[in-house]
Image 1: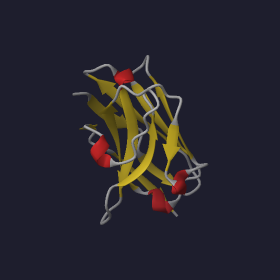
Image 2: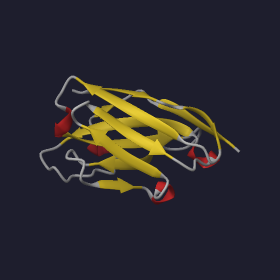
Image 3: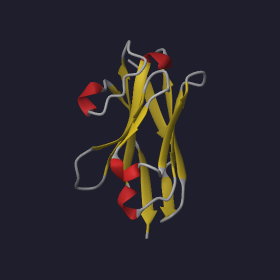
Image 4: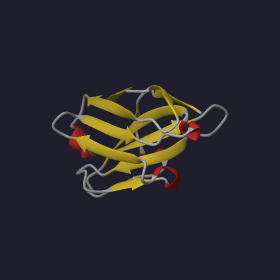
Length: 127
């Protein structure tokens, strides 16, 4: 099991930026594909983005393409989500997730494909 701790959330005005981090510990970080999901009040959890264990492949939900950038530093056991041009509809609790895999190109997009989850960090975007 890998332990995940998110940070970097907060309150920002529309058009602003935030950088979320997800620090991993307990297992070899580079063995895991990583993803971000979000859940807004009263809504189901939604996939946001994922990155392969090697970092060479990423995938984004259409609503964040061109605004969010996902990256990872395997030497620092940390996942990053740079969020620019934020919109009020981006308001949610953002959680990172890890899924162990032997495929260096694997980019899982469904929540059941992940085995370990962080507690989440709140992002609020005001209009």
